[in-house]
Length: 336
Picture 1 (cartoon, helix red, strand yellow):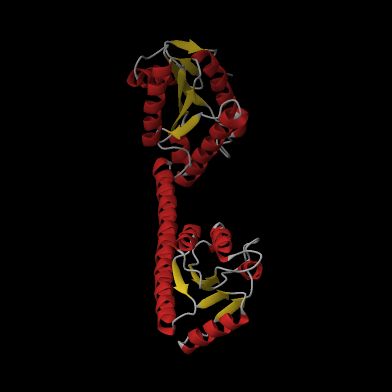
Picture 2 (tube, helix red, strand yellow):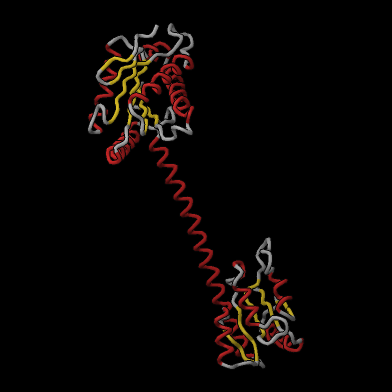
């Protein structure tokens, strides 16, 4: 453990050196002024590595900058704040000692130093420094572990909220968010639109081409839906996409009345028809039966809103698929 001795008297430096080396302290550094000590400590610029200085013995009466002011300046620097400073001086007035302790000194040794007293106090302060360093290291380790745990919990939450196949939200998380968003919309009097989408003839495709092909197909759908809703993300940062069932998807449009939701629904259908291809199948483009509803138009409760959107989706299927249905009515002609 290194000890920095700061004293403008070469004789005092030699005396302290002799006593401390005799007690087994060999790693000693010396400065004959406060500015010289500042330079060794890297006062103005933090060192790239730990200085390894564990204690400073500081004379009070020195030219240029006295020991009390030097102590104060050292304690103002973050990377030096934990180094204990012990004052060594013939000046023993109460006022001077009070100023020294107020500046950050932890102890005081009178000159000329008594060998036993000096070694005992140095040993005591260094023992305290080791304990502080140990606790600081433990605290740092604890903070690192805490950060790792928090990150792991966040990752776990993300995984628990995601559909494992498609990467979009799963139904459970979607319904939680629907509940939150509906409550917020009801409280603030804001509109909210819900879209439910069922892929047409997906079971037949899955049976014909296999589960792996079907999984790839669903992944494409999720990608298209997500990118479609985020295509104007600066305006619509809060839209949510989820896999609602085996071949069903859902989208939640925050602060969106049903009149505006119609624009989004049309864009979704066109994106699916143009971007998702059923390779090798009789149907070269994907179609879907889509139903949508809005708060407060179609439901004064979350359950009402969800039920109305489901009814609209089932109606689109019953009317021949490849359709968009608004809750309570059919939207648009049957696409060619």
